[in-house]
Length: 100
Image (cartoon, rainbow, N blue to C red; front, side):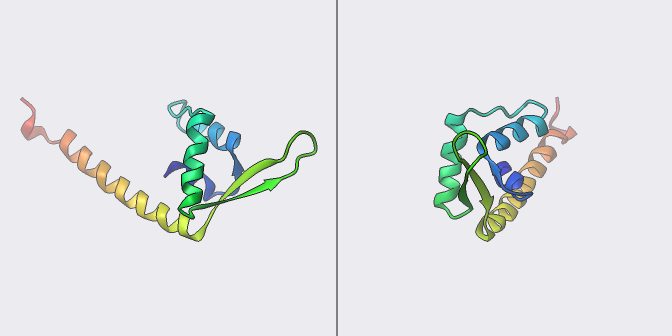
C-alpha cells in the first residue's frame, strides 16, 4: 500500500522509494533491497505497477516504476481497508469500559 501511495506521486526507482519510506516514516520503515524488490515484482505481476528502464548519464540504466490504473484502484481499496482496520483498533484501545 505505501509503495503504491508513493508511486501515485510519480515514477521512482527502487532507491528513491526506499529513501522516501525512511524519510516519510520518520525512520520507522527501513527496507532492504531483498525486501523491496520482491514486493515490486508482486505488484508488477498483479498489474499494479509498470517498470521502465532508463539510461543514466553515468553507470547502468535504472528501473523506474509507475503506478497503473489498476494499481490506483487497488490503492484506493487498500487505503479504505486500512482506515477501517485502524478505526476498529482505535475503538478497542480507547474503550474505557474494558479497562480494569
